[in-house]
Image 1 (cartoon, rainbow, N blue to C red):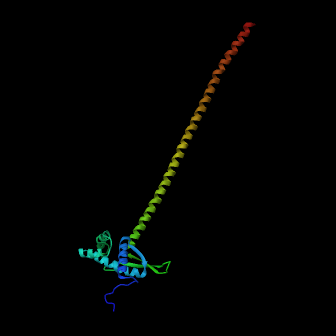
Image 2: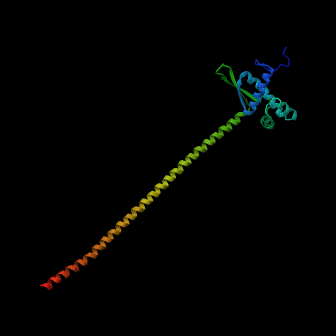
Image 3: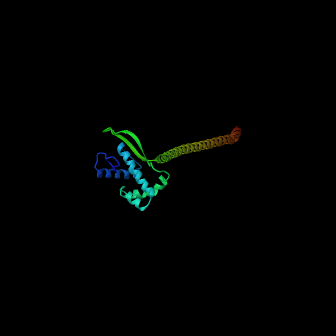
Length: 206
């Protein structure tokens, strides 16, 4: 009769089994999820729920009991600080087992053990990623609009410069025309006086 023999043997000795589950519980509290076989996942839930129950109790004896299982003091202190806020409303069932499929090598069934309520963190991460992408796209659009504005300003400045140069050239051409017309008017009476002087000289000679 198997009285007080809770848990599965998993084809291991007691010391090996205890050491394995101590490591798995510690990694579960560190990373938030663990991927393993179905049998180990179901047994790991029992260990993790027991540690969370001790953390919700919160006294010194419970802390020492948790330290006898979990291998990291930092993880235990963090668990005892966050347990009442994170799992205070629940009366058990702190973890879930999600079946993934079968392992490639030996075709063993694989499952993921994670804490209940971790999907909220996933949603927050997704929202942060979406907001980051939106901010990046908005910054890109702003960069494009700024470049377009710069190009428009440059084209406007070039147009102004070309218009100014054209007006200057027109003014220079008008001034040249005025100078030429003034020179022609000045040359007309001088020629007439020269012709009159030549005729007078001819009359004197005669």
